[in-house]
Image 1 (spheres, rainbow, N blue to C red):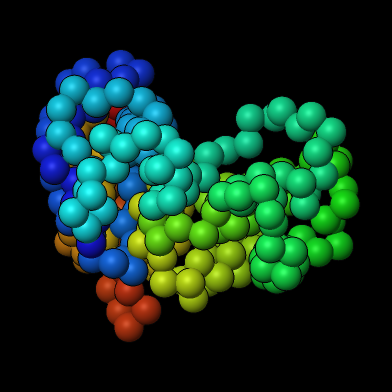
Image 2: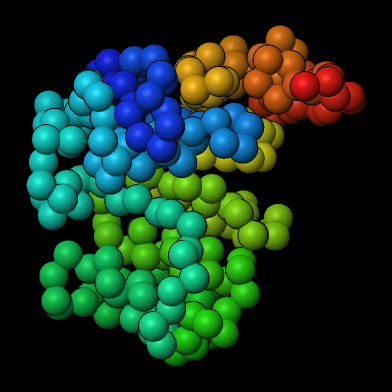
Length: 246
């Protein structure tokens, strides 16, 4: 189980993010939603121990993740961020292999993961010659190769077409990881996540099942849109029918 205990963010201008707490069962997915600049990525980095927090902690079972040295923490969680544009002449296999916890790379597992992420035909290609979507798949493969139970994913479907969005999210689902991920696509988050966390004005405005978080009131509060909410056998679907003035 993952437990966030009174975490109070103090980074990137989010000095007033109110302390919050929630728990996630092993294997559950939590999607972090909110407008651009609301602090989704900052929250994710803070949970990974890359940015300071004012108070609180993050526990995996009974172990304090924020109190660990980074090398030890890497055995528990993997963080996928957006590619920063630095390639250094490395090819796809090189970059994915960087996530290995030892100098001995399991070549069979590497080959299988490259195949799962549709990267086998690109394994020897340098990163500067990849498209945005291909780069995104490389970063996800690298994160999965770290082989941790807890995954923190920053916009994992960014730059991906519909096929690769669902292909890669399905691959992660099959691995039964516990996942905390930021999303811009509300309906995609609702489809794959067990719980959603909605950020508004540097605060956690709502946390719960998609049916609890994705309401007309919350869509207006968070995104300034008029939305129709439909709930069926396939979950919740949000359709924007209008926008409100800022």
